[in-house]
Amino acid sequence: MYTIGYDLGSSSIKAALVEAKTGKVLARVTAPETEMGMDAPEAGWAEQNPEDWYKYVVQATQDILARTQVQARDIKAVGIGYQMHGLVLVDDNHQVVRPSIIWCDGRAVETGDRAFHAIGADTCLTHCLNSPGNFTASKLKWVADNEPDNYARAKFAMLPGDYIALRLTGKATTTVTGLSEGVLWDFADNTPANLILNEMKLNADLLPPRVPAVGEQGRLSESAAKELGLAPGTVVGYRAGDQPNNALSLNVLAPGEVAATGGTSGVVYGVTDRLAFDPGQRVNSFAHVNHEGGAPRIGVLLCINGAGILHRWVKNMIGGDSLTYGDMETLAQSAPAGCDGLHFLPFGNGPERMLGNKNIGAHLLGLDLNRHERAHLVRAGLEGIAFAFVYGMKVLKELGVDLSTIRVGNDNLFQSDVFSSTIATLTGATIEVHNTTGAVGAALAAAVSVGLAPDLGSAVGRQEVLERVTPGENVSALETAYLKWERSLEGMLG
Image (cartoon, rainbow, N blue to C red):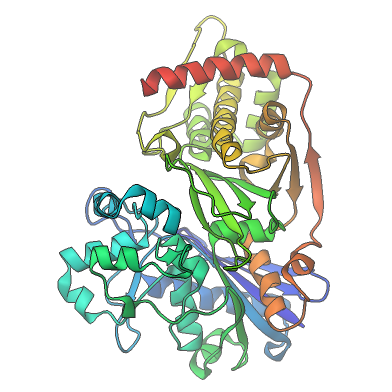
């Protein structure tokens, strides 16, 4: 028996077919072959057509069936991971009302800030754990204020994963995890966040009925089954935003466990058993995939916008297509820890929440034209990103997150030993590199919904640990370099 997991990103749809009993991955595919585009009707806006997401879910499913020749009747459930914080509006006929306002769209920042101050910081943080900020609730309020005709046409307001589930099942539903990432869940009252809805004068009926994050959420309709090539009645059994889903994929479920990713932006995501929030709003807290009102499981999320984007920039500047990331790692390892005083502040990808939403830009500091070469530049970039992770992890420690072990996937920046060992050495953490992906995790979680695995821990706990990165011996050089980096950052922040 098999399950399929989908990972809905803003650049592509990834899918994985997994044998439920063993956890073996039979195939992984990506659609489309080139990255999906996004529209920016105005500066700072970002929109996508939700119908395109579904089109590529169909394409990925058909591709995975063609590659494996697995019979549709043997696929018992599907699971969905998805890009967080977006807004999708559909009408009475489940037709999309307007393009989705996706996670990186900044138009609703002021809208959310006004509501936060009107409600009161203490009330917002103790009930919702976050400010409405630029999350889904604020985007819905922006539509109500600026596009009243579209708001009036809307039957349901959903997260991106909710829309895919709607297309698969024909029924509009959402989850507590999804509502929490939209700042639409009240943890104190264990209900939708009426304090947000009332302050923003939003119609509570726009929120779809709730289903569990793990469990039967609906079944494939006849029409969807025909389009995908799956059997009608196949269970849709799991749904979560990409960062909680990544944590699940890495078997990060219990309090004290931590996951991290290092793509264009970087994320550290720790699980706690209390309703943790940061008064400074440098990190955000959401319901984890196994959260229950009487047994809280809160994912505390640190996001660093300026991460892998700097590594890619360095690559493009010094070598372009002729330089591989493997070549860059060789160069980085040939330079000394601390890069003879050269250091990067990597914050060149917009405002950084952990820096109080300041946009200080990226900076290369300490450059000595007589000493520094390409190898120094590459290593300084990797160390600068790693230093940003270490800086942000201090906030997580303040909130009681245990950083002794950090689990990561076998991709992006964590493939660099220089990057991984810098973090491990400065934090004392062991970094476990796991052979998994978000799509694989979604497939394994879906198996729980149909009894093909007894629980989430059993489902996702079987993946291979490829490597363990432990603290290195160059502690003194890295600590000296980090302190210099931190002083430079504090100078930029004033």
